[in-house]
Image 1 (spheres, rainbow, N blue to C red):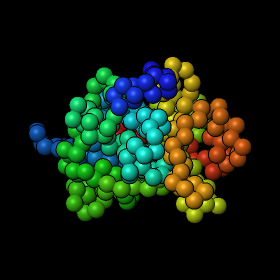
Image 2: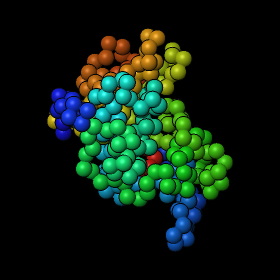
Image 3: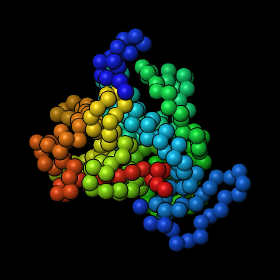
Image 4: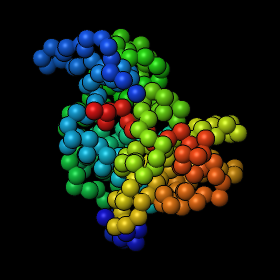
Length: 257
């Protein structure tokens, strides 16, 4: 775990049920197109070992949280709202985390955690199109019919790429997502990432998110504690069961087991 001060020093030094149908059986050496949970996510994307799930959670939370510490001018240009931060961290968590990758992302420090072993993005049958963008169980035709894309907004991530785990924030695990629907806003869906203890400080129970455009500006990445969010001055942002705008704690389909 690194403190914010330590990271600054490093910067300076570095300058949703089971399908009733019979599953599709993949031939040896071919992708597994089955969809065990009937949620639209094919088996070839699911991380089916605890080691891979742990690796994904670590890289996903690290990559999202690390953006909080970067100067706005050094943020990846794609990170402009809450969904963009999630897409960036999700995609990069599935890459091979070698020196060339770290240099390309201009990272100041890289943890020693192993990468996901099942596959390396974008080398999957779907290529770079990681996110499901319409309902329905997975079928082989989805490889080419536009059911998956590189872009997905917060609503699409919630409906087609994650599943509800709980509405009790105390049961969240690192890498889970908090979704909100604020009906009085032009873009009502909003997402946050639950970090737990986080990767940079030894204590705390953290959440990270991008505000999206704010007060005429580009917005910013924030990292409150769960306790701070539960005391938010606007009750509609408090992640508790009594808040109708809080949809709950969700988990990526690829982690479903």
